[in-house]
Length: 312
Image (cartoon, rainbow, N blue to C red; front, side, top):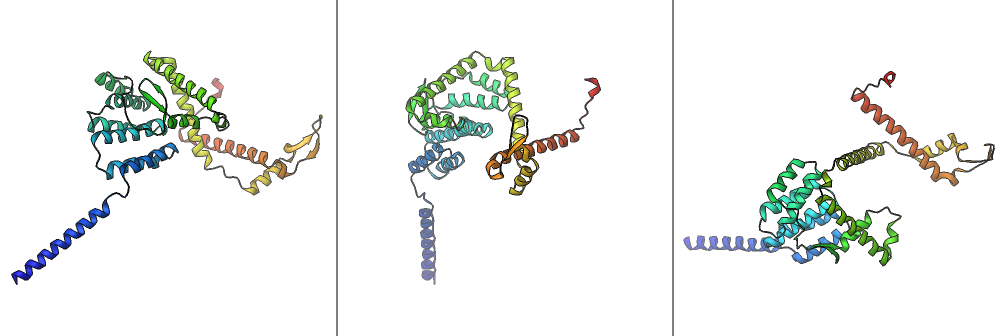
């Protein structure tokens, strides 16, 4: 009986071990960390930032990396949030992660600088000042991290890659981008970009980021951008144009799209098919104005606004 139990116990243990080995084998990553990083860089280059971050995080979660490699990957994620997505809260999260978990990293100087910049953009100047006092940094970057694309220029030790350049070009108005397909024009744009970065760094070293006129201008610009963003979100939900709306608007404003003589008399009424694009544009603008008026009136009522015109 004992002999049989011994065999049963041994068989059970071997079966469990086999299942454990099988599970471990199944859980091993299918691709190498180098392949996943190259894929993440490809996503980064194609402006698929959320997807690139997912792949970089997969590198951190699924592979045994040394501290230097882990710090580099976290730094790359932070730079995507900071430079590409302008998501300063998430960028700050990853910069702080590097500072806390990889204090011996060669990236720490640059990380401290970026922490200050994140805090400034988040309007947390007191915290930014504290970081400055603790680190006495804002030195040039000492970062040595893999970034997408070939290096096309350097500002001191800071590399500028083809990925950086293509991103800056993507921020231009659509009609301007094709002009930079020419190599010489792209080189001129790169030089202008570098000049702007150098002038910005110089202005910041002179403390112009704390100049009252600059601070006020930034505040006014921020206010306008926030208002515009709000209007885009609120009004876009209300502006829906159907084909029947276009036809009704055209019929109600037919003279607006007619040819007229010097005396202002209609000489020819243009058919809808000929002026459809203009009718659509005018109708959208009118609906946007109406939605804007409704939004403002609603907010004014909610905030109990009173205007004393007799005092003007």
